[in-house]
Length: 486
Image (cartoon, rainbow, N blue to C red):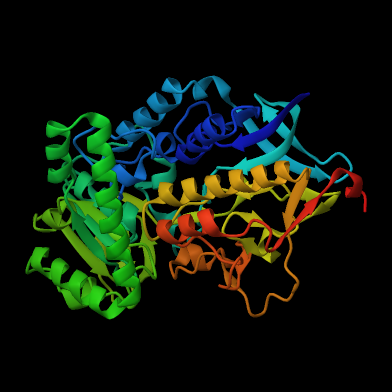
């Protein structure tokens, strides 16, 4: 049986970042990465739908210790995957990854002060032991999407495609396409599919905010031309961080002002044929749901074409050759794309077992957005949902390493968050977005009170202030060798 100080679950951006932080900050600790699939990259090697790309600037979305060198800052998925692979290879992290190792069970023994992980490796069951687990598998289920009730979908005689499981041989050239959804995926798909499809309709139940950003940073390009790579990256990284932080902070503090600004920007770019009050007039404030970004306004440019439109309506039924809406409009289709969201879960959907008892993650409090009450020596590495994901994931990893260092300094063998009040009635979900896929997942998400240390991911400034000056004892209980059985 293999035993390590740390086991990282997942070899995506967060998993590779966690490995780097362990390698550089805890060089004497042993670790391995268990990856269920056969390649590095997580989301960026998994999704293959047309146009798949980031909707954050790679200057910040990329790894803090690995400069993003490509001209495009909002980059295609294959470039991001290659970037992650190169980063892992250059640091020797790729040699620590065990592919096709799917973790199916994690159980903690207070007697041993160890985790035992049951793993399926090419169909064979193996066991690993670890002192600490870093769950870097993201927050959605790779095996199933959000279940959406689409009446009559079984009647459709064309092709139904979900972005999460895109058919490799799907040819949509010169065909009529209806994309069901209005989130980031739909906004990405529409301009890409419109290049060859005869017609593309985005069918949404309700509107979203869509903001155009430059695909490439003119300032970043200038810095790269005039400064050494590391210096240029550092300057550009800090400038991008400040701009993003202030934009998000202002939007959250003055939501009406942010809404007015975004609505004005959308109106400037929408064609006259699109009624903004109907199709781009969200009922919620910015960042109550994810803000959709499009590079160089490609989404709006596509809507200026004759073969693109947006319909805001509910589905009455799907027929053999299209969709009939509640208002009686018939949308003809050869291909229906169900961009209806993700099925959310934490810890890869695994229920942790503590001394033989399963723990329901949805009944746990979240300690500073990283650890769960009643679950010792484990962290769920989650990024930000209102700003660049990787900044939040990196802040989580640094905090967990600080907790580990304190644990070793005082001679403890385990640490577990504890909340004096088990009543969850006054608590809130750790992520409070109003998107359907977050709302339907609330019972599976940990809880917060909003008071330190029981809060979720905040922002990189707040989290780093807390990292430097915050307590690693408040809300935590440390176990020492002589007390492990008490």
